[in-house]
Length: 433
Ligand code: CTP
Image 1 (cartoon, protein in one colour):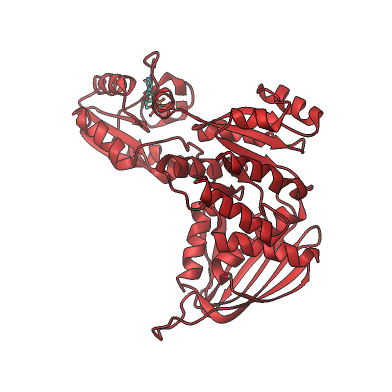
Image 2 (cartoon, helix red, strand yellow; image 1 turned 90 degrees about the vertical axis):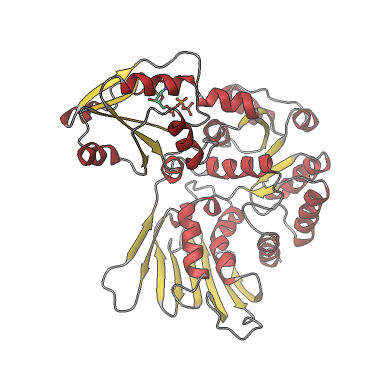
């Protein structure tokens, strides 16, 4: 029996998919179809996939062409599959021409011409449309939004506005989008405002967008004072729009595993967190961006009940109190009293260390990407390691979740809770006094 294998995402199943399955089947007697798993697609930056894995498998099943369906879960799995199932022919569309020649060492490799004029990307675009993002910026390095937008698929850039006309002109030229002479002009052609400005000006832009019921993604915090931060969050609620921080960590699943482990008590009650960030991949990172990033895991693990704040912006000590559960059960994730020391800037020790009674979670340089950590446990020689790869600087993951929230009408913050958001503004306010 001659066995054939082919792979794909098969999102929004279309005629091109049906054609390739038929042609693949004709190369042998038994067809195996590999459908990409959700984490695999997320890890390689293919964030646009709309249907669940179960839905995509069902579509392939319904063709009646597949004798076996498997899930593709990691880069390099194809070799293991070919060996495991004794595959004779590997078939794939010619958009991949040359990319799988190394599989010739295991079986015959066949590239077939793609069916013209149809793709999942086009169907998604026609079905769901795109949200238009207006960019307001006063920095010359806001270009990431343009490239990351393309990957998140459900967004397009409507234009750019800057108080500094030359910043807007350069962004406009590099990214081929219109430079709007006024903020009003930009807002009138946008569903979402992406705000990348100095903290002093940020709140005014956000407020204007919210008044006009336009969703906002902005650096954290949104405003320099707690009162303004609260006002903006309230305004977003009142106008039924989403206001979210541009903060990557909470959108990366490995970071959420870290939170789950710490908060679920899997390293015992957490007593302290030490965290430091030198820069966020850009030596010009503002104090506010660094502090927001460094405080993200701290507040998500130790809570928002802060008893005392001491130190300065470059080394800050926070003391937390947490009430034990009312029903008398043990506290799992946090000790009744805990503290955190956070450092930012050039001299900071760039590491994250979460100390529980029963183990320590550690992550080293660039931990703020949220993609790697280790757990050390008493009596165990080797640490447990958790990691994932991700593509780019992470903004596309923020956009993907933002797009999902818009589409599903979910108005809750996808990044920080309201309390966390307010607490960060409060800490900044204390530091500025
Ligand atoms: N394919 C094809 N003709 C098309 C589209 C896809 O032959 N018009 C083939 C691909 O070459 C691949 C398989 O179908 O071998 C699965 O492709 P997949 O990436 O799932 O589909 P696309 O429509 O290309 O998806 P997207 O637009 O999301 O990239």
